[in-house]
Image (cartoon, rainbow, N blue to C red; front, side):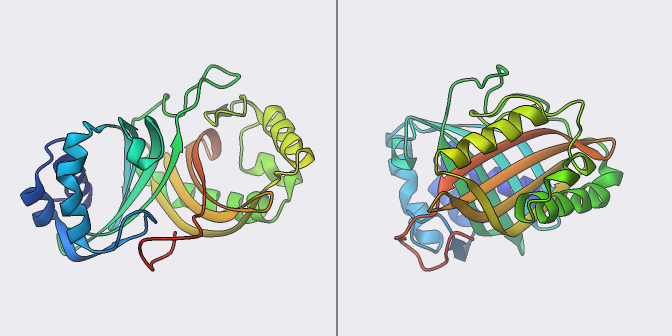
Length: 256
């Protein structure tokens, strides 16, 4: 199976079929867990499967992108009170090794109402195109993160984001660069300025590029998981899941 097929099979075994045996077959025994609420190793995940069935948890996968051994899923979980709320939007990231899921990272956020432009946290295009442009699109987003999100060089923003079409799925921001600038200014004035300090992960698959970054909202350490859609060399659409970085964890692996 491909890395994507392995990751999808594992998610299906855990959250759809509630099949502990299939879960055990798909996870590496020394599975590395970065979710702060779950101990590391395969055994804790396998042990959770009956409880997930009892809570009638549900999952909808909206997007899947992959690069090499890394697979990123854009998911919605329902009946997910154990994860932080009734309905949670997530980015789940899996590393595949020797035919098994070897490592998992995630970021989860309670689902929000439509934003000022009528977009949800998960709607929009899903088709992967421009496979031949994966490397170029990855380089574009690496530049965006370095120059704009970390470097703060806002005068260069149109080198990376389209000034004509920028569709926004963040629940607090409307479409377009003007709305983005206004939202960032409002957060700063409210004492919760958004700051990116380090990009830990970049996964590119055609027209979609995912990043996992560490920073802060005001004084609160924060994880930013972002997904960008690129068209004709510029970002034209953005989704994200933002969550505080926990101060306590059931494992020693850290958020990233």
